[in-house]
Image 1 (cartoon, rainbow, N blue to C red):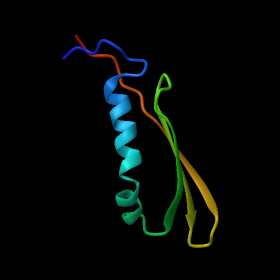
Image 2: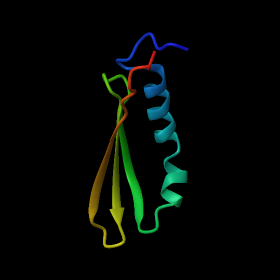
Image 3: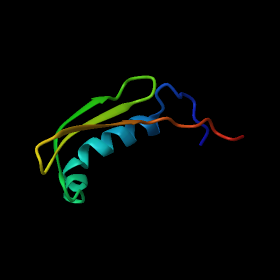
Length: 74
């Protein structure tokens, strides 16, 4: 299927939503971190998911995932 729209593309949006929904499963795989909040900008040009975490020492951390689909190779 040739992608008609890239900004954002359907796969970018669906992947960002899936990551947000999978937060409990992701957290279960993290040995020393607890997810405290997830922010998303699903409708942005390139969707973004910001994951806020705390570690065992109660230090705060942020991880930002920007989802970018490369153009189809035709």
